[in-house]
Image (cartoon, rainbow, N blue to C red; front, top):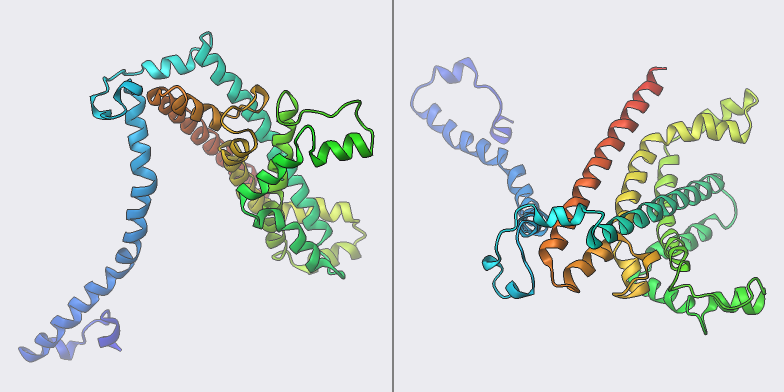
Length: 334
């Protein structure tokens, strides 16, 4: 056993044996050192990939935000002059054209995120509670509800773009031609209706993930709690309020945070839905930063906006985790 693990303390008898006995310990010590390094060697590829994929581009983006990196320095980024905090001053100058447009995009993104995350969580939680008890067809409904999350995002959003067309889209055909709910076909991809289209597509895309996480969390709630509460006369609403929701609090803490980060940074849905020219009502901040970088060729200004967005998300995440953790401790101590 001692030769296998290399951690067993030597016995008093072994210490008293000179020469050959100590010589046999040396390979065992080196084997122990090599084995202790195995976890670090296993983590090393993932650490290098993390540095290569995330941290290095992030550091490069921060450096770019302090430079006047325009189309004149595309071929030689190192020759771009330093601008200091000039890009940040322009981005937060809300009286100027660039700062005012960035603030408008930020407010649109906040409203979009609140609605999309709220409806996604509400639909996922409601469906998970309704499908908690076994019934015929539950497996089929689970598979059906997971379909939007399983589809490739580009294919599913392109289908939505066809459905939301003004002249021959399915949505206008149903609402206007079949149900006669409107006087004329609506424009869903331009104007103020583009914000509604964004929220609908985002909720359709994300609510199955909320359903999946909530269903997994509800599997850990003991049935005895519901049986005991039913004996005491608790109704379904009291069981949801007193048992289900408190038991799902740690799950919801992570779920809402993940949905918030995904939705606030969402680039695929508005880009595929509107293309490079998003309407003002659908001008999410991810698309706005992309346009500021690649359409105006001012990568310094776009990088400064990206850094500001990163700082905002870090602050919101820190405050959210601190608030929810403190609230959870107070509830558990009560």
